[in-house]
Image (tube, rainbow, N blue to C red):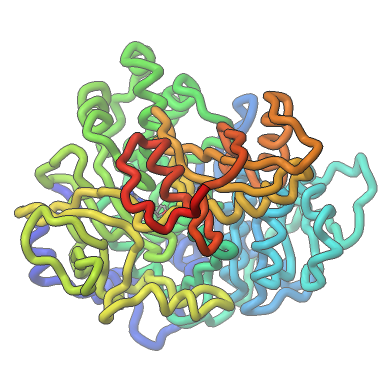
Length: 567
Ligand code: PRX
């Protein structure tokens, strides 16, 4: 029996109060995700149950019970308070997938502060714009990433504390740095949990758009209502599951479904803090008897490339359910996974802004490989005509994916940027920024993004951010950045540049520029190819026509070029 049971029945009788009741929450009550994911589970008699199995480099392992999670998150919360961190202050987590990241998110939430997790591979410039925008007061990080913080410290007047979780005393602490060792700290048995309410700010996740700087997506504690129920019904988590979400909590999947969903249900999670390889992943799953696996299409395509034989070397018989998110999951990957794992990956569609799953394939449903599935119960999803913004009622006609606002996990605004938030709505619909069709059975079929944002391996990259960073390289005069097709990542970043006088196009220069971007922004944002041009295609008003370059990369029709600048 699946948790969702009959989809049609659920749709008919749906109310978010189902989740509220199961979580013993009533309108107006205190609602604190940190407490729900630890103390409440302990109060339900599961204090001794394993909450997290963690594995790091070299096979190093750690295990935590729900009581450990409760105590450690208390300890982190208490430590932050002792530094003067108050409710509503933004605290950034900038580290690899260490246990402190998972426990730290809960600790921050428990004192009513706002958790701002950032992907640890970000370079100093990517880090800077996000910390500056958020006015972050403290950052929790590791030795190996602290240098990036030091580099930008003098430009961040609001940043008061740099907390190093693995300080070993080998080098003196620098300005604003403070050491904190979870293992050496006395566990705090009782912490006064800050009485956050449904609408209290919980998380700030940054996401990239086509133009402007990255936007801080504001989430609130009430998001747990959606995260709990979607985890229960779509990921179908059961009491004895061993659940592995491969996403990094620097991205929304890693918090909504890497922490909050499973822990609010009292389910054991696994974390693997090493790089990707098919063998290490399969080995990890075999060893921990992973039964539910939530991953991403790029990882699945990489596993496909590693071949069927690689799978056969391992006993993955504990696997009973697989799901995917982040980018189009091609039909081949669905079919392949069904063949080699005995279960297909079920696609889910959602966004940083939606906070929880919107379109889903769930267990028991007829799967149409290549489709994102149907709207989660309680979610009104439509395709809008791009001209009129009215819902398209006839099947298989392309349009804009839109949702009726009001589900619990929906973002409340963009931090310090309500203007942009307001532009996301038309005729009362929230526009996701993607295009799709709906077939006669209500299944959604992804077409593509409705903007120039590049989705590389499930990570959104703003062409604007990369173009701006390129211009900071001494050799680059002008730049245009588009997606180019890639077999595994679907899309990768490609840059077109013109050079400043005195610089010669060469392979060495290409590598230098690539490296410059990798360090400044991140390995994901690094162009995989740089093409030198004498001149970039521009409109008569001087705007670079990315559309043209994009079409060239994808072998598509160039379309209307009447606004193109003359030679
Ligand atoms: O373009 C869609 C794509 O990823 C975008 C959201 O990215 P982000 O906010 O980083 O969140 C990713 C994980 C929740 C969407 O606007 N996307 C997400 N899921 C799918 C997808 N594209 C196709 N199929 C999906 N299942």
